[in-house]
Amino acid sequence: MNSGKGNVLVTVLIMMAFLTSMVIVIYERSTASYRGVLDLQADNQGGIYAGTALTALRALMEYDNPEYDDPTDQWNMIPSIPVKGGFISVTVRPADDRLPVNALVNTDNDTKRRMEKAFETMYASLGYDDEMWKSLKDWVSTSTAIPLSQTIPGAVFNPGGNSYTAKNAMLSSLYEIRLIPGYSGVYKDIIKHLSLGELEPKININFADNLTIQSFLPELAPYVDNIIAEREKEPFRNKNALYNILGSGNRDIYTATLPFFDVKSTLFYVKIEVDILDTLQYYHILMRRNGSRFTVIRYIEGRGLDYF
Picture 1: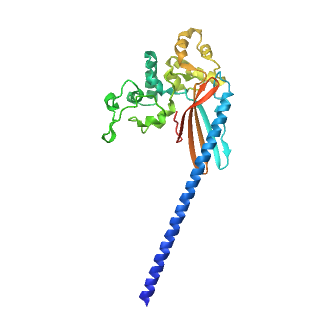
Picture 2: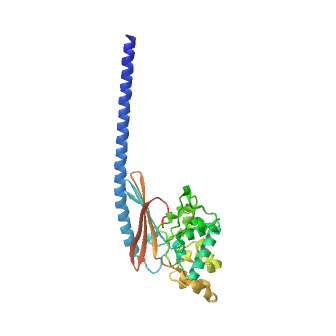
Picture 3: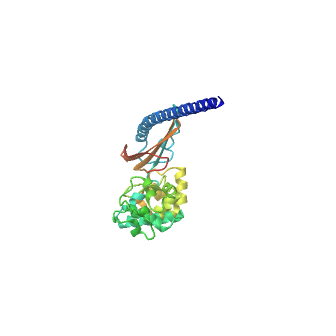
């Protein structure tokens, strides 16, 4: 009799455990489905918010003064925007305020030497050796299409026995840099100082930092502190403003640097962060200025990193 009751009790416990596990499974599936619905809703709503924000931003920038760009422009001071279920954050910066990677493929001898010296100087200042910037140059260079390990001594470019070749083309995104040997652990730090840039290199002197100016325009190194101090008082409204700082005795310096800087930008990097329904989404846009109009030339939905 006791044995029978014991069997019944075991059976009841097994059934209870089974039913409990079924309830848990159903709950987990329901939760996952609900989360999936929320993620889909956040994705759709985030895309709508980002598209609306970009449209408004382009209108704002097209009505802005096209003669020069400076940190006090309205497009550079957009506050976070609260929306139902979260917020939108829009950040904009000239994409020619940093050292331009794609200009490494420029074949003009004088420009080529300037670019190589600029990368050598910047990487040394950041504590990286020559092989780092040379690896980057080899990656984008169109002159060779051979494995990097054969071009840069000591570089390992065949993980798992599968040899890579360098891209041998301009970058479409700074995120590609992580693929280069030696960059996987440091590219997040290095890309803070780089931009895609254009084939013909030029930096916006109203935005470029001390290191960028000294690396790219070494002729201006003795005047960098003065340049930054003066632009903080009032942004450079035209290129001649630099000549006024250098003085008539430094006409050669002004002439040498004139092709490589400007006070207005051609490329702009827009990063839109949408936090909605506990989901973070990032939209990355590269825009080109044509007169007073702005055209989207790159678009990436990605992480919170810098892509351009």
